[in-house]
Amino acid sequence: MKVTLPGTSLQDRRHWGTTAERSSRKVIISPMTESKDLSKRHRVVIVGAGFGGLWAVKQLKGAEVDIVLIDQRNHHLFQPLLYQVATASLAPSEVAWPIRSMLHNRKDVTTILETVTGVDAVGRTVRLADGSLVPYDTLILATGARHGYFGHDEWEAIAPGLKTIEDATAIRSRILLAFEEAEREADPARRAALLTFVIVGAGPTGVELAGTIADLAHDTLARDFRTIDTRKTNVLLVEAGPKVLNGYSDSLSDYAKRALEKLDVTVKLGAMVTLIERGAVTFGDERVQARTVIWAAGVRASPAALWLGVAADRNGRIIVESDLSVPGHPDIFAVGDTITVEAPGGTPVPGIAPAAKQEGGLRRQGDPAAARG
Image (tube, rainbow, N blue to C red):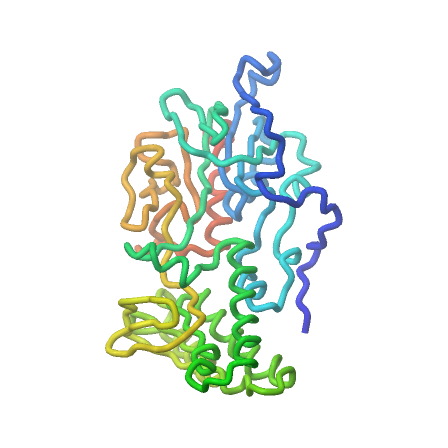
Protein backbone atom coordinates (compact mmCIF):
# COMPACT_ATOMS: atom_id res chain seq x y z
CA MET A 1 0.00 0.00 0.00
CA LYS A 2 1.36 3.40 -0.94
CA VAL A 3 1.74 5.79 1.96
CA THR A 4 1.42 9.51 1.27
CA LEU A 5 1.67 12.12 4.00
CA PRO A 6 -1.09 14.74 4.07
CA GLY A 7 -0.11 17.96 2.35
CA THR A 8 3.24 16.67 1.08
CA SER A 9 2.92 17.01 -2.69
CA LEU A 10 5.70 19.05 -4.26
CA GLN A 11 3.73 21.36 -6.53
CA ASP A 12 6.57 23.74 -7.24
CA ARG A 13 9.67 21.82 -8.26
CA ARG A 14 11.52 24.99 -9.11
CA HIS A 15 12.73 24.94 -5.51
CA TRP A 16 14.45 21.58 -5.91
CA GLY A 17 18.17 21.31 -6.53
CA THR A 18 21.55 21.14 -4.85
CA THR A 19 23.69 23.84 -3.33
CA ALA A 20 25.67 23.89 -6.58
CA GLU A 21 22.58 25.22 -8.37
CA ARG A 22 22.22 28.35 -6.25
CA SER A 23 23.47 31.76 -7.30
CA SER A 24 27.23 32.11 -6.95
CA ARG A 25 27.02 35.82 -6.13
CA LYS A 26 28.41 36.53 -2.69
CA VAL A 27 26.04 38.34 -0.38
CA ILE A 28 27.34 39.98 2.77
CA ILE A 29 24.61 40.52 5.35
CA SER A 30 25.34 43.10 8.02
CA PRO A 31 23.32 45.60 10.07
CA MET A 32 24.65 48.36 7.83
CA THR A 33 22.74 46.96 4.86
CA GLU A 34 19.41 47.03 6.65
CA SER A 35 16.94 49.87 6.98
CA LYS A 36 16.71 51.75 10.26
CA ASP A 37 13.34 50.20 11.07
CA LEU A 38 14.51 46.65 10.54
CA SER A 39 17.74 47.17 12.48
CA LYS A 40 15.69 48.04 15.59
CA ARG A 41 14.00 44.63 15.58
CA HIS A 42 15.51 41.71 17.43
CA ARG A 43 17.17 39.34 14.95
CA VAL A 44 17.00 35.58 15.52
CA VAL A 45 19.25 33.41 13.39
CA ILE A 46 18.32 29.73 13.22
CA VAL A 47 20.82 27.27 11.75
CA GLY A 48 19.12 24.12 10.48
CA ALA A 49 15.67 23.53 9.01
CA GLY A 50 15.01 20.16 10.58
CA PHE A 51 12.27 19.51 13.13
CA GLY A 52 13.86 21.63 15.86
CA GLY A 53 14.67 24.58 13.61
CA LEU A 54 11.30 24.71 11.87
CA TRP A 55 9.44 24.33 15.17
CA ALA A 56 11.36 27.29 16.53
CA VAL A 57 10.28 29.29 13.47
CA LYS A 58 6.68 28.27 14.09
CA GLN A 59 6.78 29.18 17.78
CA LEU A 60 8.22 32.63 17.01
CA LYS A 61 5.31 33.55 14.76
CA GLY A 62 3.87 36.85 15.92
CA ALA A 63 6.90 37.78 18.02
CA GLU A 64 8.54 41.14 17.40
CA VAL A 65 11.58 39.58 15.74
CA ASP A 66 13.13 39.08 12.33
CA ILE A 67 14.18 35.50 11.61
CA VAL A 68 17.00 34.30 9.37
CA LEU A 69 16.85 30.55 8.66
CA ILE A 70 20.03 28.99 7.27
CA ASP A 71 20.34 25.46 5.91
CA GLN A 72 22.80 23.72 3.61
CA ARG A 73 19.91 22.10 1.74
CA ASN A 74 16.83 23.71 0.26
CA HIS A 75 14.39 21.14 1.65
CA HIS A 76 13.07 19.96 4.99
CA LEU A 77 13.39 16.21 5.38
CA PHE A 78 10.88 14.04 7.22
CA GLN A 79 13.52 11.67 8.55
CA PRO A 80 11.19 9.18 10.30
CA LEU A 81 10.12 7.89 6.87
CA LEU A 82 13.54 8.06 5.21
CA TYR A 83 13.98 4.30 5.60
CA GLN A 84 11.01 3.82 3.26
CA VAL A 85 12.83 5.79 0.56
CA ALA A 86 15.88 3.59 1.13
CA THR A 87 13.76 0.46 0.64
CA ALA A 88 11.84 1.70 -2.43
CA SER A 89 8.52 2.09 -0.60
CA LEU A 90 8.33 5.87 -1.01
CA ALA A 91 9.69 8.37 -3.51
CA PRO A 92 12.06 11.11 -2.26
CA SER A 93 9.45 13.78 -3.03
CA GLU A 94 7.10 12.21 -0.49
CA VAL A 95 9.44 12.89 2.46
CA ALA A 96 11.03 16.22 1.51
CA TRP A 97 9.55 19.66 0.94
CA PRO A 98 11.09 22.97 -0.19
CA ILE A 99 11.82 25.22 2.78
CA ARG A 100 10.89 28.39 0.90
CA SER A 101 7.57 26.90 -0.12
CA MET A 102 6.77 25.91 3.46
CA LEU A 103 7.50 29.45 4.71
CA HIS A 104 6.25 31.51 1.77
CA ASN A 105 3.60 33.21 3.91
CA ARG A 106 6.05 34.11 6.70
CA LYS A 107 7.25 37.61 5.74
CA ASP A 108 9.29 37.74 8.96
CA VAL A 109 11.52 34.88 7.79
CA THR A 110 14.48 35.18 5.42
CA THR A 111 15.87 31.88 4.12
CA ILE A 112 19.52 31.40 3.16
CA LEU A 113 20.82 28.32 1.33
CA GLU A 114 24.41 27.92 2.50
CA THR A 115 26.71 25.91 4.76
CA VAL A 116 27.65 27.37 8.14
CA THR A 117 31.35 27.06 8.95
CA GLY A 118 31.60 28.83 12.28
CA VAL A 119 30.21 31.19 14.91
CA ASP A 120 31.81 34.31 16.37
CA ALA A 121 30.13 34.45 19.77
CA VAL A 122 31.89 37.71 20.70
CA GLY A 123 30.99 39.52 17.48
CA ARG A 124 27.60 37.78 17.35
CA THR A 125 27.93 36.63 13.74
CA VAL A 126 27.49 33.33 11.90
CA ARG A 127 30.13 32.62 9.26
CA LEU A 128 29.05 30.99 5.98
CA ALA A 129 31.09 28.91 3.55
CA ASP A 130 31.12 31.71 0.96
CA GLY A 131 32.67 34.12 3.45
CA SER A 132 29.48 35.95 4.35
CA LEU A 133 28.73 36.97 7.93
CA VAL A 134 25.19 36.89 9.29
CA PRO A 135 24.71 38.94 12.48
CA TYR A 136 22.37 37.82 15.26
CA ASP A 137 20.91 38.97 18.53
CA THR A 138 19.81 35.44 19.41
CA LEU A 139 21.20 32.30 17.79
CA ILE A 140 19.44 28.91 17.72
CA LEU A 141 21.57 25.97 16.62
CA ALA A 142 19.53 23.08 15.22
CA THR A 143 22.30 21.57 13.12
CA GLY A 144 21.46 17.90 13.64
CA ALA A 145 23.86 14.98 13.33
CA ARG A 146 25.49 12.59 10.92
CA HIS A 147 26.33 8.93 11.39
CA GLY A 148 29.40 8.18 13.49
CA TYR A 149 31.66 5.16 13.05
CA PHE A 150 33.42 5.12 16.44
CA GLY A 151 36.82 5.92 14.99
CA HIS A 152 36.42 3.78 11.87
CA ASP A 153 35.50 6.39 9.28
CA GLU A 154 36.94 4.12 6.60
CA TRP A 155 33.84 1.94 7.01
CA GLU A 156 31.53 4.66 5.65
CA ALA A 157 32.26 3.89 1.98
CA ILE A 158 31.34 0.23 2.55
CA ALA A 159 28.53 0.64 5.08
CA PRO A 160 26.64 3.89 4.41
CA GLY A 161 24.38 5.45 7.02
CA LEU A 162 20.94 6.93 6.55
CA LYS A 163 20.52 10.64 7.26
CA THR A 164 19.83 12.38 3.94
CA ILE A 165 17.90 11.90 0.70
CA GLU A 166 21.23 11.18 -1.00
CA ASP A 167 21.98 8.45 1.55
CA ALA A 168 18.54 6.91 1.02
CA THR A 169 18.75 6.79 -2.78
CA ALA A 170 22.29 5.35 -2.62
CA ILE A 171 21.15 2.60 -0.22
CA ARG A 172 18.08 1.89 -2.34
CA SER A 173 20.34 1.43 -5.36
CA ARG A 174 22.59 -0.99 -3.47
CA ILE A 175 19.65 -3.06 -2.27
CA LEU A 176 17.93 -3.37 -5.64
CA LEU A 177 21.15 -3.97 -7.57
CA ALA A 178 22.07 -6.78 -5.17
CA PHE A 179 18.96 -8.70 -6.25
CA GLU A 180 19.67 -7.97 -9.93
CA GLU A 181 23.25 -9.22 -9.66
CA ALA A 182 22.14 -12.30 -7.74
CA GLU A 183 19.69 -13.13 -10.56
CA ARG A 184 22.63 -13.49 -12.95
CA GLU A 185 25.17 -15.01 -10.56
CA ALA A 186 25.91 -18.70 -11.17
CA ASP A 187 28.22 -19.27 -8.19
CA PRO A 188 26.13 -20.30 -5.13
CA ALA A 189 28.47 -18.71 -2.57
CA ARG A 190 28.58 -15.37 -4.36
CA ARG A 191 24.83 -15.47 -4.88
CA ALA A 192 24.31 -16.10 -1.16
CA ALA A 193 26.52 -13.10 -0.32
CA LEU A 194 24.49 -10.92 -2.68
CA LEU A 195 21.31 -12.03 -0.92
CA THR A 196 22.71 -11.30 2.55
CA PHE A 197 21.99 -7.89 4.07
CA VAL A 198 23.61 -6.80 7.33
CA ILE A 199 22.28 -3.83 9.29
CA VAL A 200 24.60 -2.68 12.07
CA GLY A 201 22.75 -1.15 15.00
CA ALA A 202 19.32 -2.07 16.40
CA GLY A 203 17.98 1.38 17.16
CA PRO A 204 14.80 2.64 15.48
CA THR A 205 16.47 3.09 12.08
CA GLY A 206 18.11 -0.34 12.14
CA VAL A 207 14.90 -2.07 13.23
CA GLU A 208 12.87 -0.34 10.53
CA LEU A 209 15.41 -1.09 7.81
CA ALA A 210 15.77 -4.75 8.77
CA GLY A 211 12.03 -5.35 8.85
CA THR A 212 11.35 -3.52 5.59
CA ILE A 213 14.17 -5.22 3.67
CA ALA A 214 12.90 -8.59 4.87
CA ASP A 215 9.37 -7.72 3.78
CA LEU A 216 10.67 -6.49 0.42
CA ALA A 217 12.54 -9.74 -0.19
CA HIS A 218 10.00 -12.20 1.17
CA ASP A 219 6.86 -10.60 -0.22
CA THR A 220 7.18 -7.69 -2.65
CA LEU A 221 9.91 -9.16 -4.89
CA ALA A 222 9.04 -12.85 -4.50
CA ARG A 223 7.20 -13.04 -7.85
CA ASP A 224 9.54 -10.81 -9.87
CA PHE A 225 12.61 -12.98 -10.41
CA ARG A 226 13.07 -16.19 -12.38
CA THR A 227 16.44 -17.58 -11.26
CA ILE A 228 16.62 -16.66 -7.60
CA ASP A 229 14.16 -17.18 -4.78
CA THR A 230 14.20 -13.84 -2.94
CA ARG A 231 12.47 -15.51 0.01
CA LYS A 232 15.84 -17.07 0.80
CA THR A 233 17.30 -13.63 1.46
CA ASN A 234 19.22 -13.47 4.73
CA VAL A 235 18.72 -10.26 6.75
CA LEU A 236 20.89 -9.85 9.86
CA LEU A 237 20.46 -7.13 12.47
CA VAL A 238 23.64 -6.85 14.54
CA GLU A 239 23.61 -5.01 17.87
CA ALA A 240 26.45 -4.61 20.38
CA GLY A 241 24.03 -4.02 23.25
CA PRO A 242 21.83 -6.50 25.10
CA LYS A 243 18.55 -5.61 23.35
CA VAL A 244 16.99 -3.98 20.33
CA LEU A 245 15.67 -0.42 20.74
CA ASN A 246 17.95 0.36 23.64
CA GLY A 247 16.47 3.24 25.62
CA TYR A 248 12.92 1.96 25.21
CA SER A 249 11.04 -0.24 27.66
CA ASP A 250 11.87 -3.94 27.85
CA SER A 251 8.34 -4.87 26.76
CA LEU A 252 8.60 -2.75 23.60
CA SER A 253 12.08 -4.10 22.90
CA ASP A 254 10.90 -7.69 23.26
CA TYR A 255 7.91 -7.02 21.03
CA ALA A 256 10.13 -5.52 18.31
CA LYS A 257 12.52 -8.48 18.45
CA ARG A 258 9.67 -10.98 18.12
CA ALA A 259 8.17 -9.02 15.23
CA LEU A 260 11.52 -9.02 13.40
CA GLU A 261 11.98 -12.73 13.93
CA LYS A 262 8.51 -13.37 12.47
CA LEU A 263 9.80 -11.63 9.35
CA ASP A 264 12.78 -14.05 9.33
CA VAL A 265 15.26 -11.38 10.42
CA THR A 266 18.19 -12.85 12.34
CA VAL A 267 18.86 -10.67 15.39
CA LYS A 268 22.36 -10.81 16.85
CA LEU A 269 22.63 -9.19 20.29
CA GLY A 270 25.82 -8.55 22.26
CA ALA A 271 27.70 -8.70 18.99
CA MET A 272 30.11 -5.82 18.48
CA VAL A 273 31.27 -5.26 14.91
CA THR A 274 35.06 -5.28 14.77
CA LEU A 275 35.67 -5.18 11.03
CA ILE A 276 33.78 -4.16 7.92
CA GLU A 277 35.42 -4.89 4.60
CA ARG A 278 34.16 -5.17 1.08
CA GLY A 279 32.02 -8.30 0.97
CA ALA A 280 32.21 -9.24 4.65
CA VAL A 281 31.40 -8.18 8.21
CA THR A 282 33.06 -9.51 11.37
CA PHE A 283 31.31 -9.42 14.75
CA GLY A 284 32.20 -11.49 17.77
CA ASP A 285 33.71 -14.71 16.46
CA GLU A 286 31.60 -14.66 13.27
CA ARG A 287 32.56 -13.47 9.81
CA VAL A 288 29.58 -13.11 7.46
CA GLN A 289 29.86 -12.77 3.70
CA ALA A 290 27.55 -9.91 2.68
CA ARG A 291 27.61 -7.54 -0.27
CA THR A 292 25.26 -5.00 1.35
CA VAL A 293 26.01 -3.53 4.76
CA ILE A 294 24.07 -0.58 6.20
CA TRP A 295 25.23 1.42 9.22
CA ALA A 296 22.65 2.40 11.84
CA ALA A 297 24.80 2.06 14.95
CA GLY A 298 25.74 5.55 15.96
CA VAL A 299 25.59 9.25 15.22
CA ARG A 300 27.93 12.17 15.66
CA ALA A 301 26.67 15.69 16.16
CA SER A 302 27.55 18.61 13.90
CA PRO A 303 30.68 20.62 14.82
CA ALA A 304 28.56 23.23 16.65
CA ALA A 305 30.36 22.58 19.95
CA LEU A 306 33.70 23.19 18.23
CA TRP A 307 32.42 26.44 16.72
CA LEU A 308 31.71 27.73 20.21
CA GLY A 309 34.50 25.99 22.12
CA VAL A 310 32.07 24.56 24.68
CA ALA A 311 31.78 21.23 26.47
CA ALA A 312 30.33 18.28 24.55
CA ASP A 313 29.71 14.59 25.17
CA ARG A 314 31.64 11.82 23.41
CA ASN A 315 29.37 12.11 20.37
CA GLY A 316 30.03 15.83 19.99
CA ARG A 317 26.66 16.98 21.36
CA ILE A 318 26.62 20.25 23.28
CA ILE A 319 25.88 19.90 27.00
CA VAL A 320 23.24 22.60 27.45
CA GLU A 321 21.52 24.23 30.40
CA SER A 322 17.98 23.24 31.41
CA ASP A 323 16.55 26.07 29.26
CA LEU A 324 18.63 24.77 26.30
CA SER A 325 20.97 27.76 26.35
CA VAL A 326 24.65 27.12 25.75
CA PRO A 327 26.68 27.53 28.98
CA GLY A 328 28.35 30.93 29.05
CA HIS A 329 26.29 32.14 26.09
CA PRO A 330 22.81 33.25 27.20
CA ASP A 331 22.06 34.50 23.68
CA ILE A 332 22.75 31.11 22.06
CA PHE A 333 20.40 28.12 22.27
CA ALA A 334 20.78 24.63 20.82
CA VAL A 335 18.14 21.95 20.14
CA GLY A 336 17.63 18.50 18.67
CA ASP A 337 20.49 16.14 17.81
CA THR A 338 22.95 19.00 18.37
CA ILE A 339 22.61 18.62 22.14
CA THR A 340 22.42 16.27 25.06
CA VAL A 341 19.97 17.09 27.83
CA GLU A 342 18.31 15.10 30.58
CA ALA A 343 14.58 14.55 30.92
CA PRO A 344 12.96 15.22 34.34
CA GLY A 345 13.55 11.59 35.32
CA GLY A 346 17.28 11.90 34.72
CA THR A 347 17.42 9.87 31.51
CA PRO A 348 18.79 11.44 28.31
CA VAL A 349 16.19 12.90 25.94
CA PRO A 350 16.21 10.64 22.83
CA GLY A 351 17.17 12.03 19.44
CA ILE A 352 13.73 11.73 17.88
CA ALA A 353 11.46 14.17 16.06
CA PRO A 354 8.93 14.85 18.88
CA ALA A 355 11.77 15.72 21.27
CA ALA A 356 13.35 18.09 18.75
CA LYS A 357 10.00 19.82 18.20
CA GLN A 358 9.45 20.27 21.93
CA GLU A 359 12.94 21.69 22.31
CA GLY A 360 12.42 24.02 19.36
CA GLY A 361 9.41 25.53 21.11
CA LEU A 362 10.73 25.64 24.68
CA ARG A 363 10.22 29.13 26.14
CA ARG A 364 10.10 30.53 22.59
CA GLN A 365 13.88 30.99 22.43
CA GLY A 366 14.73 34.22 20.69
CA ASP A 367 11.58 36.10 21.67
CA PRO A 368 12.72 39.00 23.87
CA ALA A 369 9.21 39.47 25.24
CA ALA A 370 8.98 35.82 26.30
CA ALA A 371 12.43 35.97 27.85
CA ARG A 372 11.45 39.04 29.89
CA GLY A 373 8.30 37.26 31.02
